[in-house]
Amino acid sequence: MLPWADMVQAAARLGICPGRFWQLSLREWRFLSGQGGQPLQRRAFDQLMRLHPDKEG
Image (tube, rainbow, N blue to C red; front, side, top):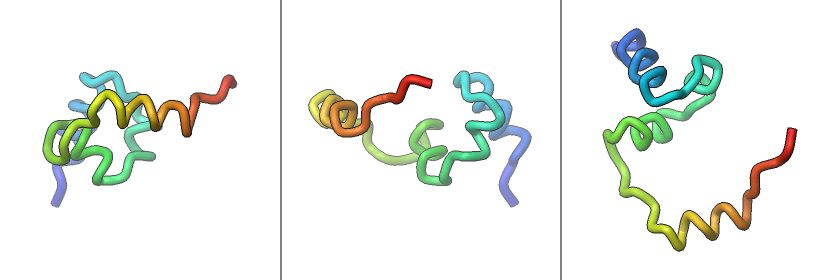
């Protein structure tokens, strides 16, 4: 069983609101919480930003 309460509290400490927390995939959560994956290199991050820019709300 996953420690949901601990995970939600950790998300809050990271500045992730509850609604966004519940939208995360397990892979995304593991990356954000430092439990897996390699961080993106700056070049790859910049490329993703160009390909998928934030939309103005």
